[in-house]
Every structure is written in structure tokens, then in C-alpha cells.
Image (cartoon, rainbow, N blue to C red):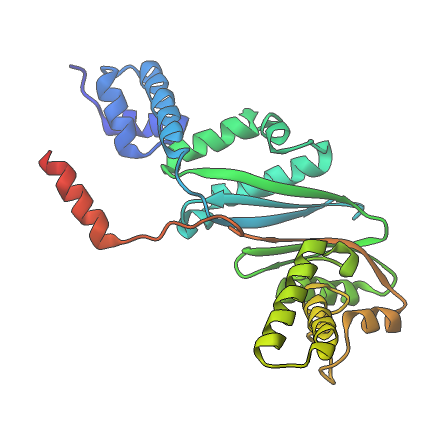
Amino acid sequence: MAEITASMVKELRERTDAPMMECKRALTEAAGDLGKAEEILRVKLGSKASKAASRITAEGVVAVHLSDDGKVGVLIEVNSETDFVAKNDEFLKLASDSAALVASHDPADVAALSALPLGDGTVESTRTALVGKIGENMSIRRFVRMQAKGRLATYIHGGAKIGVLLDFQGGDEQLGKDLAMQIAAGKPKALDSTGVAADLIESERRIAVEKAKEAGKPEAMLEKIAEGTVQKFLNEVTLLGQVFVKAEDGKQTIAQLLKAKGASVEGFTLFVVGEGIAKRSNDFAAEVAAQAAAAQK
């Protein structure tokens, strides 16, 4: 059996960037052959990646990229299992590099992005290697690429948990920043009422009518009450209807702000990390009990 020295472990780690103990085990299995040990690690890292693939990735970051001329913007969400990994420099680099590739190559979807070249391989091989190295699943969930009709503004908030990409006409740079922050804070579903699903509006209307009936309101008032409720709902979920968070009087809406500035919004995208993903609820006691039960089998 060949002696596995610290220098051999160090060299293999530098070649593969794998954890030290993994390197030592691979060298032992390869009887000290560095080339064979590297192959063993590649197989093991790939195996780790496939085992991790089924685990929930509801943490992560939103990254943004603007082209040098400011005419193309990208917002991308890359997920991980834990917030700890979401702060890892290599994970953050994967997110920023992927955003830049979307800007320059305009891939049709995540699969097309994953096939693009990155480093010595592709986006997918880089992701897979990182999963193997860290031992935690990660995935590119979604992205949007925006070609400016006017000018682009971006905003990243809350440790890169919320990201906004905005296209607007008129106004100035400060207006763009204010609008992007408004979107992050107010989380509108659409620019105006035309972008809100009809069934969602109808649902609000029905609920308002039923509540009014339960409260004993006259039949003749039901429609008026429902209309008021729907309008309040639309003001809350549309950007133009929301009250500007920096309004001095607490009343100025975004529509009024834009009119005063001679500006308009062409479109926006809001990403909230993990939005819509069912997060696992960890029960430590149950987990320990399950492990103990498994050990007795």
C-alpha cells in the first residue's frame, strides 16, 4: 500500500477543489495514483450531485446583470438548499456568470442556458461540480432578459432575496431607483388592472358580495360595495395603483408620480427567492428519532 502523504492530498485538492478527506479517501482507493484518484473523485462528485438532485432548493439568491450600454438587463434566480450555501462565493459567482451569459447569448430557457460554455465546461457541468464539492443541491430556477425600450433600473434587496428589473421612459435615474424600490416593497402583481387575471378579480368580487350579505347589507348596495372592494384590491396589487412609499402626504400614487415626472413604465419583473416553492419544515427531534430507528434495523 502506497503511503498517502499530505503533499499528495494537497495536490489532488488543488486539481479538483474537493474536500480534503474526500481527496485522502480517493488516493487510498487509487493506491496513491493521482490520475486515478482524480477520476474517482469525478465519479464521486457526480454521484453526490445526482443524490442531491431530489432535495428541495428554496433558498438562494437573485442576481442582476446590465450590459455595458445599459440596454439589456437580466434577472436570474439560483436556488440552494440552505441560506448558508447561498452566501458561498462560488455559488454567487455561478449566479452572476449565468446572468451575464443570458445577457450575451439570449438562451430560450434554463435548459439552453445550462448548455452554454462556462469555464472549462458548461453552466451545467459547473453547477454539477459545485454540488459535488459542497454536497448540497442547487439549481437555476428562472431568468428574464429585458431589452430596454427606455432605460433600465435594477434593485436588489434583503441579502439578494428580492430582485427587480424595470424598464421606464422619461424621468431620471433617481425615479428609476424609486420605482424599483417601490416594486420590491409593494410586490405588485401587474402594472395596471389589465394585467390582473379576470378570475382573480371575479373572486374578490364574489367574496365581497358574500361578506356584505353576512353583514346584513341591503341587496341594492351589494354591487356598489363589491366594486369598492375590487378597486381597493386592484390598487394594492397594481404598481400604478399603489401609494408611493416615499410620498410625503402618504397619498400620492405611482400613477400620479409618473404623471408629475412626465414618465411611464414599460414593464418590470420581480423575483422573490423561493416564491411558490414548498419549503421543508425541519423537525430536529423527529429527524434524530428517524436516524436512531434506521440504525437499529
